[in-house]
Length: 307
Image (cartoon, rainbow, N blue to C red; front, side):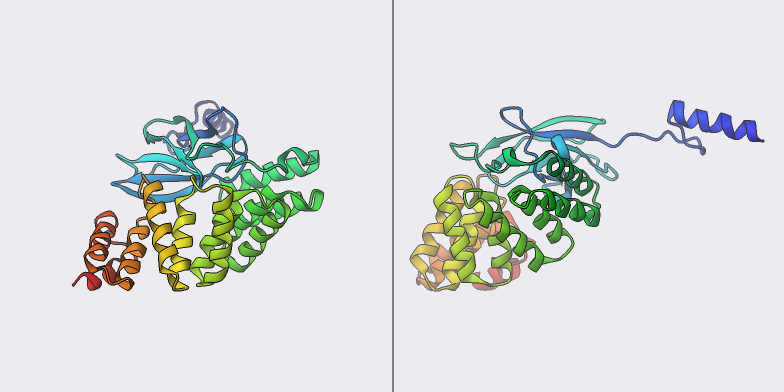
C-alpha cells in the first residue's frame, strides 16, 4: 500500500496528473510592460473582456507578471489597464498570453513614473515586491501587511502608499484608501496616479470641492493622458454649478476617451446642456451615453430625461 502511494505521488509530480486522472493545467499567464520594455512595478489591473463587457480579474505582480482564471472564457480577451496608458488586447487562448504592452496616451511616458522608486532601500524594495505579488494573488491582507512593511523601511515610498490605497479599495476601506493616496501625493506631488484614484473616490462620495481640487491639480500636470480625470472634473464643476467649466471638461474628456471607458462623460455633458437650456444638444449626448452603455447605472435616468 505504501509503495502504491509513493508511485502515485511521483506520477503527480512528474506528469502533472491529479490522483483522479485529470491533468492539472497551468493558468493562462503573461506580463504587462511599458513601451520601453520596463515593467511598471505598480498594481496594473488585468481585465477579461467578454462580449464587450470588461471585468476585473486581478492585478499584476512584480515584473508585471499576472495569471488569469480562464473558466467560462470562451471567446474572451484579456487586456491591462493602467490610467494614462493604452493596452493591447489579446485573445484568451492558450497558456502563454505573452506581454501586454502599455503605451502612453499623452506625449510623455510619465504617468507610471515616481521619482521615489530610485530611493527605495533594499529591504523596502523586497517588501514592496512581495506586496505586489500578494496583491496579484488576491491576498489583500498579506499585501497590505507587505506595503506597511515597505513604508516601515522607507516611509517616503509614494508607490507603496499608492498600492496600499488600491488594496484598501479592494477591501472596501475607502477612507483608508483616501488617506493612503493623500500620503502618496504629499510625498511626491508630481506623481499623477494618486490624484486619479483619489479624485474618483472623492467623486463617489460626493465631495465635489475636493474632487475639483485634486482633478484640477492633476490636469495641470498632465492634461492629455487621463479622460477619467476630466470626467471627475466635469462632474465636480456640474455639481458646483460651474456650467461653462463643466462643459469644457466633459468635451475634453470625450475627445480623449477613444476607447469609451468613461461613457458617463456623455451623460454629464447632457446634464450640463439641459441646465444651459440646450435640449437638442442634451438629448444628443444622452442618447450617445445610452448607445455606449445601455445598461449603465445612469441609463434609466437618461431615458427619463429624453422623454
